[in-house]
Image (cartoon, rainbow, N blue to C red; front, side, top):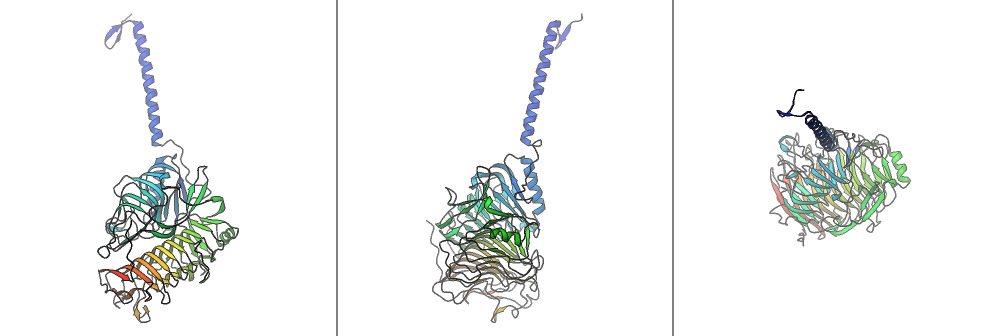
Length: 609
């Protein structure tokens, strides 16, 4: 027998076969270990996990529900596809809500046109995003002046970038957010934001070149920037009041507010809507400790679906005592939605858009207390409506101080997507209403954006008494943009651009005076207060420029000792200008100039404790 060799050395046959068996055993063990490690890596990467189902029949196919147990690669791919679709779809008919169940996610979430990202916890820290929850899309030169109609609510974010961007303009609220880092609200170029409420930014928040910003009931590590008008109400860490050295108005406490209702998921996995309680003289966020409010089971809501529901089905549900939850989509209405029952909650997910088709209002509420209407868009239809959203049938003396109604994140649009018309966007006839973030916009671009096409007199008419508004953005209407007839009204932050293209002063004048004041408090009013008003002119086009169209007064109020207007900013664009700030007072604002005026009977904001 020939000798056996192992590693070049002769060995016996028995030793050879023993060594061979050991080698084979070791090889098999190695293969098994490698297979296990490969399998482990596969699970972590996720390609062999079941394909997630993001939608549910309860909410329809435009509401996506994410769960921490889902394949993270699949979630990121879904988000990236939506970002590619919606990033520049300014007048899209698509609407989306992305709901995140409690847990932790390693994701970059981009929020674009008509997308709303919502954490389903009771507190922001219940849903954690490691990465980003951001808005980054911009137009040429990093401009974000048209980055509208989106939102993020109820997350804790650990940003991977410094700063994280929420670079937006109007109708893009940041609510109930906890940012463990820095956040910037522009991209170093034009920006026309914005609104943040009930949020914590542990690092620096602010703007580099943005025009204005409003922050309510938040806590900031620090703040930087804001060129024309920045207002802080009930904010810890707000910059100091140093008007007119800088355009800052900081008010230490929020006198009265009800935060926006939101969808949440209880420990049993059932959906509920949390309605925060009223708060008075508040400062900082509401959710550090147990938050006062009411939990309403989703079973008490009628869930409306675009393409299925009509004015009739919705009104029937309201008549049966249901609350109302709109899922994303467009809702053409052949008659007004009518709310009669006190304490009704109407909540929109994913910017649902109500469009009256027959010249009626889109939504009318009776003069009852405790209504909560939040998260809705209203598009004026082709047939002229008297109003899009109305609270109370007419002026009334019925008090609702013990149970005020509240409106949060209400957006109205006249033109842009539809060549629509309406006399007024929002009329408030009821007393003691609280409004928290409006953007009322007569379109300056898009479909029907023409002086003779998208006609609309007023963005807002307030006839009720004791109405309080935080964050009022109201632009381009053809008469007084805001007309306030009620007593003891209060406005905290106002942003308004004058219409761009009035053809002439002959066609656009108030009893001979050039144009109409943007903010008008009626002559009979005895008491009114407003803080931090920014009113700007950007006249352009022909025959506007050739006719040298200007505005006489940015604001007009009664000459009364109990009417207090504190801090007004005026800016004039490339043509025309503004003759006076308020009531014939204040200097003219010419092309390229910023005027910071103290106001009329101003009430200097108290220093924060």
